[in-house]
Image (cartoon, rainbow, N blue to C red; front, side, top):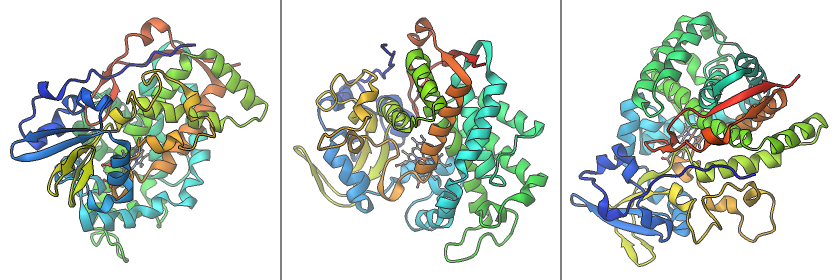
Amino acid sequence: MSIFTPKLDLRPASEMRWTTVADIIRLREDTRPSELLSQGVVHTMIGERDVFFISDPEAIAVILKRDSASFPKAAVQQRLGYHAFGPSISGTINETNRRQRKALAPLFGGSVLRKVIPIGLEAAQETAKLYARTDEIDLSRLARRLALDITWSLFLGPGHYTPPSPKVELIFDRLLDLPKDQGIAQATVLKDLVDELIRSDRFATIPKENPVSQITCPKGLGGDAPLSQAEIYANAVNLAWAGFATTGTCLAWGLWVLGQDVELQDKMRRELCQGVSISDTLHALYSEVMRLWPPAPDALRLATRELIVEDYKIAPGSMIMVCPYALHRRRDIWPDPDRFDVSRFLKTDRPRSPHQMIWPFSGGTSRCMGQAFAWKELVTATEVLIRECRIVVQPETAAQVGLKPGVLIDPDRPLMAQLERIA
Ligand code: HEM
């Protein structure tokens, strides 16, 4: 079965139109020069600044992981995070960012992660009941609502599944009605969600070890990684956003791909009913989803030391735009790169695992804090949804889908499908 796989229209660097470094944050449709699909570096000047776009796999491994301390998050990226959320993890750099990551680390620890599966299970069952009917539904809306529902129970709630109240449901709807590329407007609605949390009875049920429980305390969170009240508030909004936007989009793509391959779906459902684990197949499926459509397609870094990549010498002070989207589609690395092929990530005896060549969660000091959580959520939600429903995507509607680039890459239209309830 062939699966339709939309891709971005990349342009040669010479046709691009940035004037300031901040432009490359705003004009992300221009930030992946087409040359990056076959070469590792593209150099350009923006004002007085040297800017290097990078899709070289070795250089990306050094910048994002092996020596990430020498290539910190660029201030322009931090300012964008601050503008949306305030002084949260995404809106801070250096020591403040490290302190906040330490303070919030318990939220991503083993004891919280163990709760993802039962919460995901209940939330996905509720979703199946809510959406399964014969007329068409938008998988993107379904998946983003489900991701928000799980985040609401885990990070902003009591740690077990609690269905949203009618007031919260209205806030969910307002959020999902916004265009997907309106990050700032989404953050504003999520502030209403956090305000509603503070006013509700539910607030008293948040476990004390969750920093969000201290959001009303004027002194904030004490201890060796203190957080001010404003920082706790900003991070609650940031986590609510991070918990729905990226994971929701990945889940939507995964369900959409499965909807184009009903045979694979039926096979998975049979295996689930026989008690056979399908987790390896789902890990491979979502790795391939994040190879083709990494929700965060690039990351802006500052070079604080020299780096040689191919024939280029990158001097300290240069800006670096690391481009996973381009690396994930390089023609010299991936055979038939634009084709969706789960088998690329099924267990292989190849010396270099393809997992080492994809960076959907970034790496090093600014890596995604929610990676393990997101994986558990994706696998659990997909298992429940395909056990309860058959997802059918019509080839004609699939073929119309394109990508809308921005800070995140999203589909440019609803991902329409029919959800048939399995008796
Ligand atoms: C499939 C799902 C997800 C993907 C693909 C993803 C991707 C990313 C990426 C690429 C970054 C790093 C950005 C950079 O290098 O500048 C990041 C950072 C982060 N993510 Fe995720 N994310 C996902 C889910 C989540 C979830 C569910 C949460 C939490 C609820 C979360 C919380 C965070 C946080 C707190 C950071 C740290 C930001 C920083 O230090 O600047 N993410 N994510």
